[in-house]
Length: 167
Image (cartoon, rainbow, N blue to C red; front, side, top):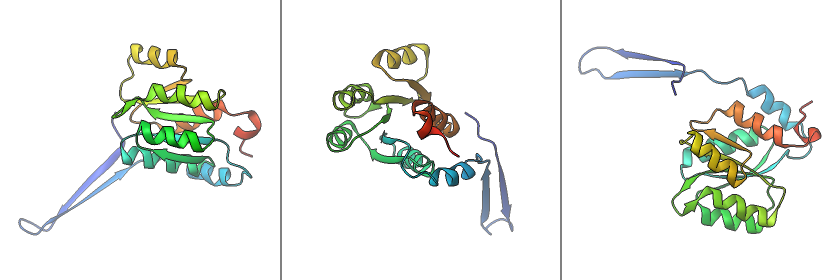
């Protein structure tokens, strides 16, 4: 996926070093984040599972900025421990984890919280991948790289109207 942005390079000459400036377009989510902070309670309790530390951190920070209570896990083992000790409304997981498939986590979570919803994240988004996650019970399958406005909208669509409303 192409990213909108610019790259500027400056140098005083050979052997003088170079300075590179890379600028990316950002989404106008800051206003929504401030509005979300006005909520009295977190909109959803979310478990985010991804082996990639940067992806996991970015997803968690974005969700927290939108008023959600978020806990991270890097693998299935850690995610199961979190599920055993905490209540979750939503599971957001990569499908291909080193110690097991992310699809198994949704089943494990639903043994503790039958109403919990799952959102799959994956670099694989062919029709057969979408069919497999739907069959496993996920309500959405979002392709990486993650489009944060789409992720936020998907989560808000899962919440009761009172919890999803930002007024």
